Image (cartoon, rainbow, N blue to C red):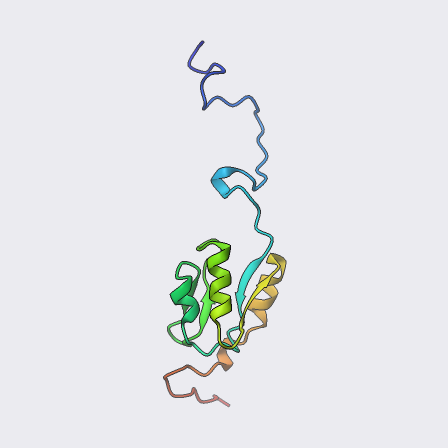
Length: 122
């Protein structure tokens, strides 16, 4: 057969391929939920970061944890990080809710941990 024949693994029979999210290169499955940190309740203990360091970071200015990457760690590792949180501020949520939850946080009102409180300009 030619170099584009049926035995060539790179040959594609379909011209229009629809991406479904179930492709092995994309992880083979669609995630049904996302992890979210309620930063208003976070005390900055960093337990989640120590357990799932590819998913969580600590914001340098506010000293609170934040989910930076949804696919950074396995679901089991993320669940372990959730279970270690002493104030229960990490939650599984629907992906559709993430934007609304993020927009509901008023980070300007957060007092920075380890820094003097910011004074109100008014």
